[in-house]
Image (cartoon, rainbow, N blue to C red; front, side):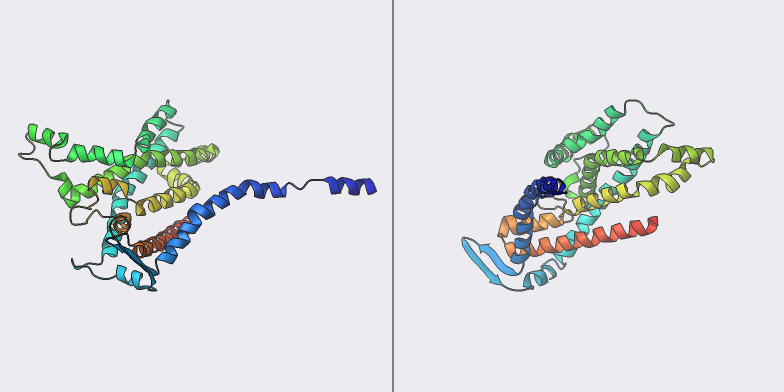
Length: 311
């Protein structure tokens, strides 16, 4: 018995090493993420901005910054509502075709009936646009669709237009280009994630359904989609969060002005105006906090609604 007690005393507890290994993550997260987030919330309750070379504040003003966000501007609209609507709409016109095309490609490449060869090659090709920086993508489209760009030259030379079309000056074309760029950059990533989810489904389920005479549509809605739902929810919510944080594509394409008439100005572009131009850290903090709340509410709503429909 004494020998057994000695062995137990000498045994090493490895539990502490788990905490040691994960400690760097929490330390880095606390310093570079949690602290700035708390500081942003703190600044949102203060009047703190730069007027020329003079720094005003910080002076505690409570919820005044939040109230200011919902005031009418000189143009007669509430900026926060207009820019939130722009952001959601620009995400929708890019995400809707993205999910449809990505799902079709995922089903196409994972079909055992078709048995597509060279899947690795196709995965690489469709993912390549995601490797291009959004700013470079935007500059490419800006050059292509400018009034002296190759698209206008092609239209004029072919007789389809008598003069250059101002693609970057019309609301429909600017928003369509932003949606198209977001679609091209992200549909490959979505396709690969959906393919991974479909390939994780037991093939015997599909074989049993086919033996029972189920059609492809019935197999998709009764087997594929319900079992793919966790991956689909993840992709959908991350895409929505990325859409709400949309900045680089419209910023570069419209040179930061959200032309025409702020119809392509997003929430992050609005936030950047406070940080880059007026250095108004109080208002920027209020916009950031509001953006966080909107993102959390929308994500929770989507997650619960999709889960409830799947039950």
